Amino acid sequence: MIEFIAQNMAPIMFASLIIFLLIGYPVAFSLAANGLLFFFIGVLVSPYSGGSINLAWPLLHALPDNFYGTRVMSNDTLLAIPFFTFMGIVLERSGMAEDLLDTIGQLFGPIRGGLAYAVIFVGALLAATTGVVAASVIAMGLISLPIMLRYGYDRRLASGVIAASGTLAQIIPPSLVLIVLADQLGRSVGDMYAGALIPGLVLTGIYMLYILVMSIVRPSSMPALPPEARTLGHGVLSLIVALLVTGAISYGAYRYLAPTQGDNADILGFAVGVIVIYVVAILDQRLRINMMSKLAQQVVIVLIPPLALIFLVLGTIFLGIATPTEGGAMGAVGALIMAALKGRLTREVVNQALASTTRLSSFVLFILIGARVFSLTFYGVNGHIWVEHLLTSLPGGETGFLVGVNILVFVLAFFLDFFELAFIIVPLLAPAADKLGIDLIWFGVLLGVNMQTSFMHPPFGFALFYLRSVAARVPYLDRITGKKIAPVSTGQIYWGAVPFVCIQVIMIGLTIAFPQMVMRYKGPAVEPSTIDLKLPGMPSLSPLGTPPADNGAAPANGGAAPAPGTPDLSQPPSFGDAPSKPAPPAPDLSQPPKFN
Image (cartoon, rainbow, N blue to C red):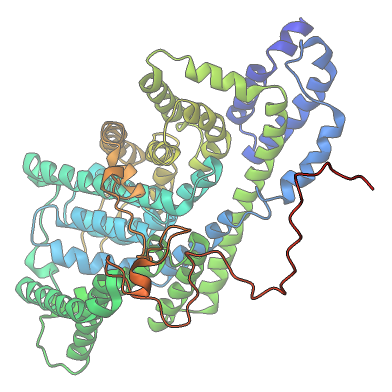
């Protein structure tokens, strides 16, 4: 029995961890306690393991180095998490989400399903500025859900689109889970962001396509806004003209800056066009010139600041100007400036943001410390080799591995959130993926799309819990129409999430089928045969031992003649006239030699 336990310590340890988590113990303490318990057992039974257990009491001395080394306390990459968390909470408290939803809802309001389109669009914008799922879901649940219920939207569809749009913060940079995945896979956060950008936008487009199909199949489930609800009036033509003028100004600035700025001219030209139209919209609104429609003014004024913040964070990272940590710091400062300009930067807002940031950062830190204790023992019992052999031996090779891993992560997402999956499961999967030759950035983005379902799984999806916390539980009177609005049940929230979970599963398949969506992070492929190396021209030299051509005249190949006084490198060096010595007398060979 002892030999069986000693030789199967790794699977027993992993199964025990799952039992601890299912019972309900906190993740950080389950990891640490499981690691220490099996370390003690492993040391005792190591003589019976046949060499498969490499644990000894002095190995515990490595824990302080693991805690304070580059993997936890001194990890610069993880420093981006508190920055992006603080930025997202400040933006949520500053009312940016409310302004965006109101303005975009007015823009899409005249079409059927317009509010749903607005929620998805704003969800993508919030994902690119906050990176925090809770902030996005709660903000849109508080603001858009009452409006959608007021104008007759189906409760399941409204709940599903809000929860799903909030989870876009999971995959669209600057996502917190992408930072953790990059750290656990040992890859660059910037590459992970670049790889995840296109899949995130494609997923957003599929959400909108689903709304389009539902608006045709079930038009009564998502009616257009009535005319009396469109407080900004009409003016889409004015907005189109403003966009065309912006494009023209940007192109002109690009042509002007191209000779001096090179590759950065297009970005700088676009920045000039956006700044000009933003200033014009502000002046048009303040001075009441009315050159632009009210709708166009509001869209430009509301949209440009978050877009500028997105460029400040992601643009500087993609251009290589800043690291993700530095980008997060700039984003936090930008969020504070935006809140101050709106007049909503109060002491209470800063205190709430700091408290939430500290809470989340401590949560991540303690899980990571527990994971280091667990991995120390798990690697000591050769658990990583057991997992690698288990996964690489799956039938189907690389395809079988990907299918098995995605099914495993999908099932575990019913019980674990993305931080727990990233710290527990990903370090076990990465070596097997690397051995099979799978690109780890692509693998990380694929896992990120899969882990996104952990927020939407009934009954444990955190996005569903966030929405449940702000959705109406009892009937209430609408303050605009005065009608009695029925509450949203938990069952309606769960059923509304099911179609979007299916869409996320489809996105997993698309990521596997079209890996180039992610692999574009490497840039365009370079064909070696097209590389042309040119060396600078060098003057030709005559072979050593031969006189220069034409006694110093211009060379026949067109090279310049040597300047007067230039040493002749074609002749051996001369060291001046040496003092002459008398020649020795010639020996007389007709006489025998004499030996003195």
